Amino acid sequence: MNKTLLEISQTKNSGLAEVLSDWKNYDDETVLLCFSELKRRNVPINEQMQHLMTAFAIHKGVPLSELESDFFNRKGFSSYEEYYHTQIQVLEKSDEDKAYVQQMRRERIVQLEEINKKQAKKDVLYGGLWFAGGLLVTLISLSSGHGGIIAYGAVIFGGIQFFRGLINS
Image (cartoon, rainbow, N blue to C red; front, side, top):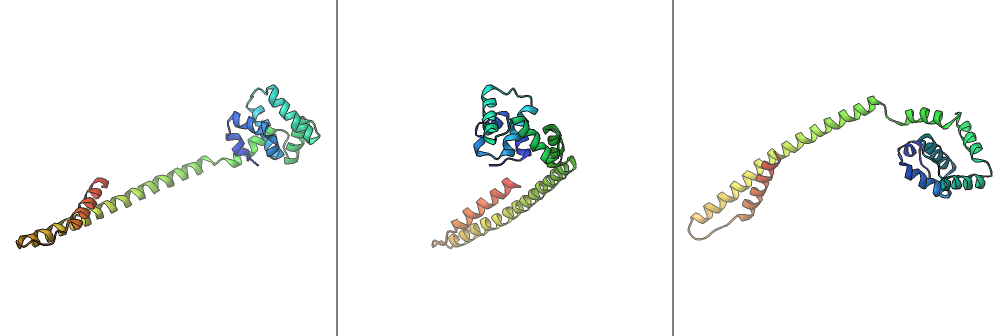
């Protein structure tokens, strides 16, 4: 499993410690970045974590400090701090991007509200027409005195649609 620097920088300390405890299931870069991130945060490295990192270094056949320095040198940096500050700026969105995204969200919300209001007006209109039409058919057919058509479906459907439109408008 791999984790990106952005994911690692946003992970809680316990999550980073889990990566170290399960280092065999992660690639070398993820393990080294998690260990370095914990050190950057000044998290005390307890005996268990130190033992895990020692096991990792023994597995690689190179001391941990050498693994770290080689890794960052290959990336073109002298330390994790330098790597972190350079890379994290690239990974995080700029304030302008965040403002643009927020503006787009606001505009989309306004558009959705307008669409919902238009639909609510249609529901009121068509619901009222169905209700009135069903009621009219029922009243006309019953006024003949010999029974008639009771258009309760149109009345119920129209009433529901009408009130749904009123509630949403």
